[in-house]
Length: 352
Ligand code: NAD
Image (tube, rainbow, N blue to C red; front, side, top):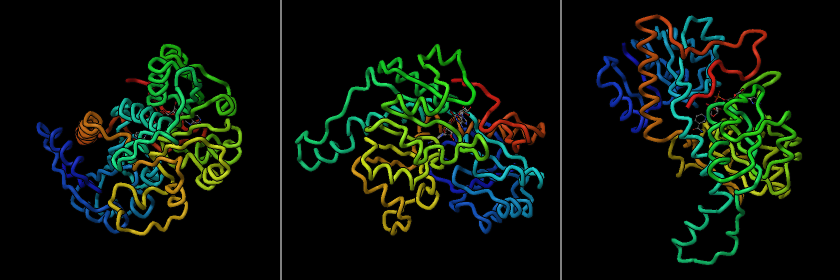
């Protein structure tokens, strides 16, 4: 099988080559990011392998179809960037990597909380400049603080576990669908409403997929919800940027209501992330404004990036492609939501 890998980075190629040693998949590694024009580079390939910010809209999917591509293999968990309905209409099968390493993101989320609470990023820069003053670096103990976990799937549960068992936090959780058994084992306590969680928490960490519609998560953190949070709250998002309404977040930061914010994702990240934009002007005023706040820490969608996660992504992607070729089906196929489905629910349960 020939597979065109869009937006390939060195770390992608290394992990795919390592995982492909015993397989016969012929990968073409493309630097190009996916759009309707570059999609034609997949001509003569049965599959296209894409990542989180590769927008697979109607035009791109049609270009794939015209290029005789049959399969789209997401080398990530989220699939909000693919128009699944259109893909189905065109007969294109879409597969993903549902759980490559929840630990990678959970550990990063906890690291991000510690960074912004204890200000590691500021002391690193100060000390390099020979400034050993501690003024402005005062944090607070996580022990005995209340942390709110929004979304208790694979990553949210693990994040809660590290904070409850490792730091002695009181961890409250909210999800549309509870996983009582794991939550109890990991030391998380469910609350009935998101509002309850927002009101109680000193630190809030978001772990939902980006979904649309009635129970959708797009802009679930908006002005109203930000106002519900405690003054001085620490908010971390390692899930999808679209969960937060950036205009409202900037408003709340300007009022001084938020203590600190950590973002590994940003709703319009695709214009900047995964590329060296250091000699480019940032035209996105909201993004530039976020970067200007002294109490906002931004990383470039890096939470997944561990050796273990990369190898797992490559191995699962190869297995997905083999299953499609040999059996014509794959357990990791993404299907469009049917009427009556409940927003954001995934079939699989939390599994480490
Ligand atoms: P998961 O599917 O295991 O869990 C998501 C949970 O969110 C589910 O329990 C679901 O019921 C819940 N949920 C959905 N809608 C909700 C709502 N409206 N309110 C409350 N809960 C809701 O997913 P996961 O593997 O734990 O991933 C969580 C998020 O992390 C996803 O958005 C994923 O795309 C993101 N992610 C980010 C990175 C990164 O590098 N930053 C890497 C991997 C995954």
